[in-house]
Length: 213
Ligand SMILES: C[S@@+](CC[C@H](N)C(=O)[O-])C[C@H]1O[C@@H](n2cnc3c(N)ncnc32)[C@H](O)[C@@H]1O
Image (cartoon, rainbow, N blue to C red; front, top):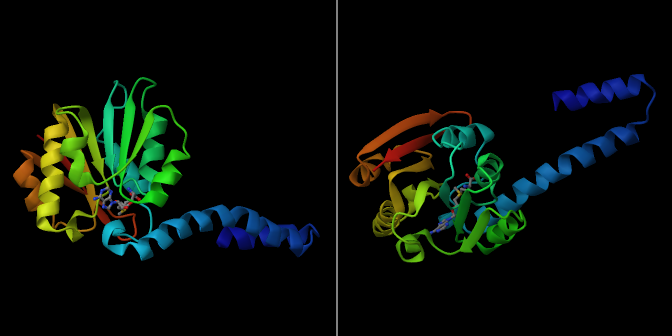
């Protein structure tokens, strides 16, 4: 907002019409606005599964991905990618021979992810409850999850975590963000080491769980 006002002042000083200022505003704000709206509209329609009103911040995404060694050939499973804020970052960091599999329940979000058209990305529309049946044992180096575990039924969380444990390699890691510490005890039942860190620059502030088998 401040930078827009500043630009407006500069343009006016140079005797450039205000029409151009408004064109500047429309051109530069519309894509951002649409991106938010599509997440929000799906969130409002499917509050019980989306569990958030906005995609994760860049800060939260980089906090989650700091746990991953991108210098090696790796296979990652992303659960609940939504509009793909984490997905895009993973795709920009992995080696050419690495792979990312996205498992997303929401049809609209899957269509958006398909649009990334990346040969290292596979998008599957389905439920994280089916991880155990969808994938072979021990196939992933990392599971990165944006699933709103805290609002899921206990049995559903157990099924998801059992599947993730079975699909992770011995040295694999499960990385999960949440808006509270409510899932800590549950995660400790499935993983021998659960580190928690705060990602304050996010709306709402979040915590990142970094879990090892
Ligand atoms: C809180 S949003 C996170 C979106 C994105 N990862 C981010 O960080 O902005 C949760 C996502 O999980 C998806 N989801 C909810 N339940 C799911 C399930 N059982 N299986 C797969 N995806 C699910 C929702 O559709 C939504 O895209």
